[in-house]
Image 1 (cartoon, one colour):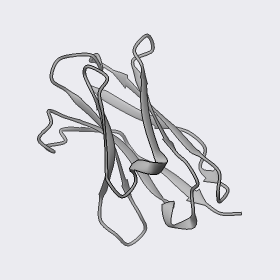
Image 2 (cartoon, one colour; image 1 turned 90 degrees about the vertical axis):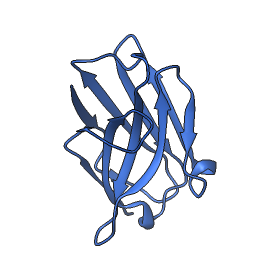
Image 3 (cartoon, rainbow, N blue to C red; image 1 turned 60 degrees about the vertical axis):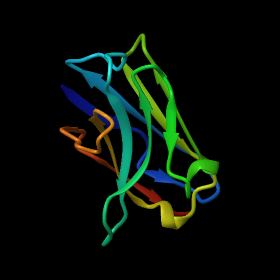
Image 4 (cartoon, rainbow, N blue to C red; image 1 turned 45 degrees about the horizontal axis):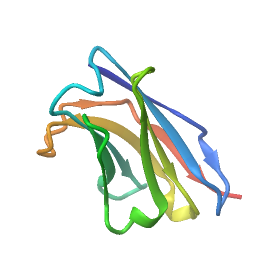
Length: 118
């Protein structure tokens, strides 16, 4: 299974960050897989943002839920993160990853740097 993130590397404050994770080697609708977005701000640890599961149900970190939307495109086997009203504190390397609902992320994308700056 391979995951690959894509999206703009620079976003202006107050705008919406949008990233896509393209998945190959396995279907995002396969039972019992969960597809997550995780980020790592500079000098900090990993932070789980949210996930979409094999059925399309979504889960969000409580502190980000009001600004986060995760959706999927099953025809193209990809899922998307949208984070609204971004601030410089949202600057991070963003990863997509797969687990089975147990936070054991076996497969990861390579990560993509997103900087929030005017």
